[in-house]
Length: 143
Image 1 (cartoon, rainbow, N blue to C red):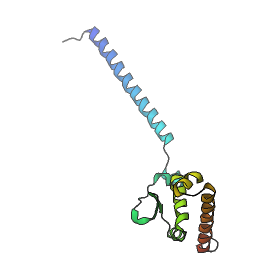
Image 2 (cartoon, rainbow, N blue to C red):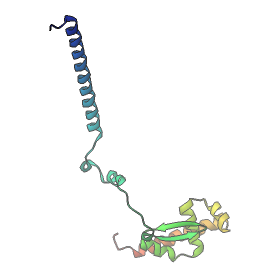
Image 3 (tube, rainbow, N blue to C red):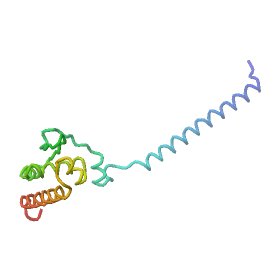
Image 4 (cartoon, rainbow, N blue to C red):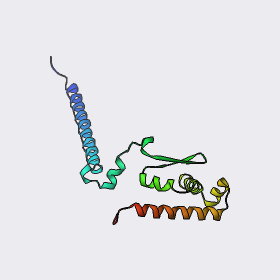
């Protein structure tokens, strides 16, 4: 059985087409691998700040002390801070809880707690100063 020269030409064209497709796929694969290597980084090359962004810390209700005011909760993880916060009067605790959790202005807090804006500002600054003093007294020297 003899082959037809016309069939042989078609076989050569099909063979060239297949080789071209394989060559282009190999180039695309190598190009993608190069792009991926340029974007990748070893964990050892990352800074501590970048590593911190990658981790997740589980938070449990038992890990923090909760202070509530007007239906909003302030979670404090540090026992020293929680102890200093609990020593504040209830009105100042409420003002700080609303200020820290809702990021409300003094006038808005005043409307909620029934005080003037200036009274809220005085209580807030006084409470923050008392917290600073209590915590600085509890901190070890040089820390």
